[in-house]
Image (cartoon, rainbow over all chains, first blue to last red; front, side, top):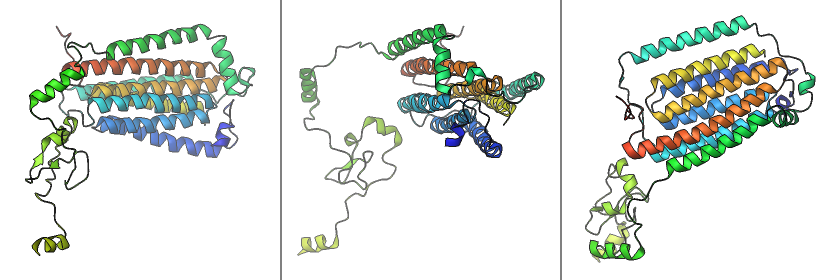
Amino acid sequence: MSHILAAAPSGTNTDSIAVATIFWILAVISVGAALAMILVRRAVHCAIMLAVVMLCLATMYAMQGAPFLAFVQIIVYTGAVLMLFLFVIMLIGISSSDSVVETIKGQRAAAGLAAIGLFVILILGIGHAAIGPAARTTAANNVDNLTGLARLIFTTYVFPFEVTGALLITAAVGAMVLAHRERTTPKPTQRDLAARRLASGHLAPDPSPGVYALHDAADRPALLPDGSTSELSVSQTLAPRDPYEETPPVRPELPASATTEAES
Amino acid sequence: MSPIHYVTLSVILFVIGGVGVLVRRNAIVVFMCIELMLNACNLAFVAFARLHGNLDGQVIAFFVMVVAAAEVVVGLAILMAIFRARRSASVDDANLLKY
C-alpha cells in the first residue's frame, strides 16, 4: 500500500504488473458489489455492499495519485455518509425490505433497456474520445498531492470553495428544520407523570426483561410467578420482532439437588 | 493501468447505479444508488485528472464529495419526515402531489 501511495503525484507506478493485478481484483470486486447492491432485498445489505464499492474506489484513487481523495473517500463516504444511511435504516426499521411487486407495468424491462442504451452511448463516447496513456509529471503537479490541491482550491477554485461552505450551512440548517418535530401537546411534567402512574393503578415499575426467562436477553419476556409471561417487560420497539417465537419454559428446571432438598 | 480502464469501470458502475435508481422501490436504496453514481463520476474525474497530468479533476471530485454529503443530509431528513408522516419508505407511497 505504501508504494502505491508513493506513486503520487503523477500516478505512473513503475511496478505496472502489481498495479494491473490490484486494478483487476478491485474492478471485479466493485462491479460485483454494485450488482449485489441492486439485487439484494434488504437495505442494510445494500449499505454494506455500497461500503465495499467505496473502499475499492478509495484504493483506486490512491493508485491513481490521489491519496488525499482516497482518505477523504474513506472518512467522508464510508465513515460519515454511510453511517448516516445506517442511522436512517435503524430509525425506519432494519427489516424494511423492498417489495417485489412491479407497480408500473414493464418498468423493469424498460429500465434494463434504458441501462443498455446508456451503457452503449457512454462506451461509444469514450471510444471516440481516444484516451491516451496517463500524462507524465508536469509542472502543475510536481509538488506533492496535498500541496497542489490546496494551492488550486485556494486560488483558482476559491469562489466555488466559498459557495461550498454556504451549501453546507444551508444543508445543515435544512436538515435541522426537516428533522425538527413541532410539539403539539405540552411537555408532561414530573407531576403529570406521577398522576398518570397513580391513575393507571400500576404503581411498581415494569418488570425487567429476561428475568427467569429461558435467555437473559432484552427481547425475552419476564416470567411471572404463575408461569405466564409478562408483555410489559419487553420494550415496545421490540414487539414487531415477535419475542414469543421461542416460548420460555413454564417453570425453570430445578436442579436435582434442589428437588431432593424440597422433598426431604 | 491506462486511464481508459478506470473510465470504463466508472461507466459500468454508473450504469449499475442508474438501474438501481430506476428499479428499486425503497427510497434509502435509491439514495444509495445515487451515491454509487456520484462515486462512479468521481472515479472518472480522478482518471481524467491523471490523464491530463493536472489536479483540476481531483478538485472537482472533492467538490462532488462535498455536494454529495450535503445532498445525503437533506435527502435523508426529507425521507425521515415522509416516513414520520406516512409510515413508509417506499417511493410509490409518496404520491401526495399526484394530480
